[in-house]
Length: 283
Image (cartoon, rainbow, N blue to C red; front, top):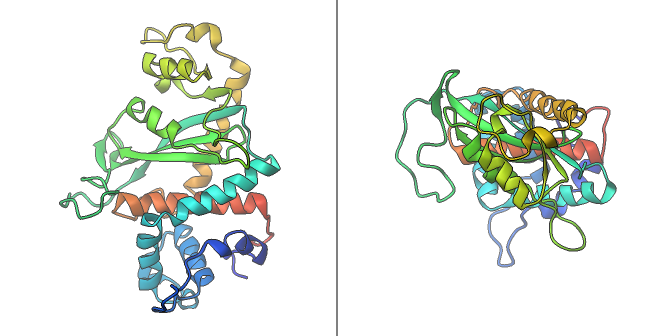
């Protein structure tokens, strides 16, 4: 087994979710495990598709699966399966969640017209910010740094417009009842110390762990509800961001299409879930 490949135990967790040949025949799929391993390899070193090692099959096939599977909902189905298992076994911290964002570079300055893809933004979600031309990845993690949800926005956009969509992207399925969509506490930095964020959290209800911003537009009761002990645990999402950018194709955003780039981030989520459920010395 090579470094970035899935172990047998990890592959067994998702093998039955892979597409199968239709009842009435059709072309045969290339070995799904080989393709998934190729996708995981591409995420880590950040190489070009044409540099994909031959033992993962044709690079065109791996690239085509990255385009096809997320649009068919396969990645979301796999993540829901793994989150269900994680939630059942208890590794997910349901009390404290953290929210933050990080920048990802975007080398494609030219904006092309929107194609016939309802999931793809008009501008592919890049934008010009102080850090350069790129995108923002908005993340929610649990108190241990396990990633739970994400959204993409242009690089110049402030954190607040993406606050609710990012938080609503988290759905932890359970064997009984509705999915879990909220924790007891939500930790964030001063960028989220604003009235809309506190109003949204009060409606849930969720206790905010957000430092008050001096002279800013703070929410009602912000200073009273702030817990410095819980705020010290907010470094969990910083560790999550550092681990995420260890995938060299994510930090510079090698994928032009936002749907494909989001799929690369979800592949990183998938890898982390599998490592948590089925640790492997070589993974």
